Image 1 (cartoon, rainbow, N blue to C red):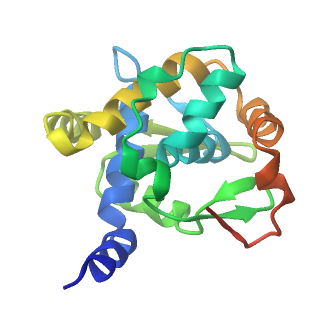
Image 2: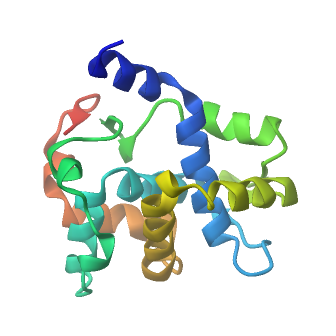
Length: 182
């Protein structure tokens, strides 16, 4: 299998995406593991910044923070781990609902619905698996960046985070809906 086929296979596998979302949920769950992310929109915007570390770096600079803690690898500046598209509400991957359903179906996450808002939390089983993932060297950048996301964006609501992304990254807003973010 050549490198391109390998990368396509990884992109199609929901496991890596589910693991990344689980790490975000773990980080935002707090010390007691009982805090939740209020809204799928917020989770998606956080994941956008995690999937695109160059954008995370720019977001930190826009907030007047030091960006060196992102520690972007050289290859990350030239490539994208997984593609997202411009959607009505900004960066989006059409598989998010499937990823969340996988986590819920495996008992790793739980959701509540309040009015029109999906509230996503991690279960005890999800915390246990996330702790195992945290021991893997290949996830250390994701873990560190999830911590950066929490310390920077935890108090920001979903709509405020969406507006921040639109303001900070106007090139995303200028894309046509359905166009791939590069």
